Length: 158
Image (cartoon, rainbow, N blue to C red; front, side):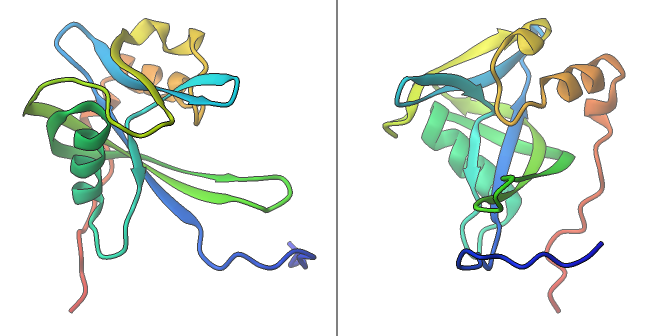
């Protein structure tokens, strides 16, 4: 594939976002509602990975900030990328599974947050979810793949 030349100032580093799948015993998934202008949509709780932070640390921090819940990392589930057609944004999405170990569910303070709740898994495909991974989550849950995930080797800096 030929290399593309960009007319805009080149972005040097993609954004890395950790998205967390949390299921309760009633087969409901934890989602956070976002609002930007007149738009309303759902996202998996999570956010931008900070420099020097592990994926697990990011997941725990973001869940606490957005939902008030304490979670424990279980496993990695998926990886994806989102690259805008004009190449103005590039996001690497890391999807992990976690379980609740404490806290009290409450909406965080960020202005973009409009709600937090557990939604029945079967409703995922009816919602506006970004990134649009409802089908993959639902399919993985039905095939028990949410309990398998991918192997993460951790920080292997020597």
